[in-house]
Image (cartoon, rainbow over all chains, first blue to last red):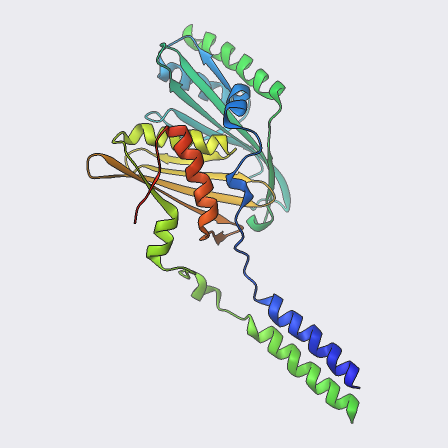
Length: 158
Length: 142
């Protein structure tokens, strides 16, 4: 009998102590295991033009070509963000690919373009979203090849 | 008799356990686990520059270094919102505001799985990355 009481008390105490725990551990997501310079080598390219607006237009056109919905653009900071796939809350599980492309004028008169991809598994509850960042150099190579083409078409008003 | 007593105690403990964590979610909307001053100190750094646009651009580049995608940018207000999904969803809002004519205050606030992050360590990591990208030293504001 005493053993039963002890067991119940131990279980209850464990539940009481662990039940109210709020997690506030440092997020490891603010650091990266790939150095910034390594990352920039993969996800950035320079284009020999000084016309930032033309480059941003070519990026928007490329996102339209590849089926992205453009959600945010900012000329002052040189930014275009878009997404494609299922939106939040439309299905139990879905996939949402997000992209951010930025342009930076470089002192030598060229424009540096940088892209960031994220592949997110979405669902009805944002607490259970999962995702990963794409570091595949082939993906970035493909993106910048298409962007070169888009810039050519943009320059020839096609 | 002993069985009934055991059942009674189990019921009592279960009730206590379940009731202890009960909280009205509406009361949690504005809840904070740190004082506003402590939170702002952890989340803010001052940089010796007056170029707001360059700072906003560098904040975006730093967020890209950390694999965030940018949801919203407002250069007039100096605001950048970004999201990153790993094992959970992490949302960041960064504001860039001038202090006087020679300094800029950058404040970052983040939430993970819909919980606000108030711990100072992640913000320190973020500002270390930002300071490297800006080539400037990050000063504590208080």
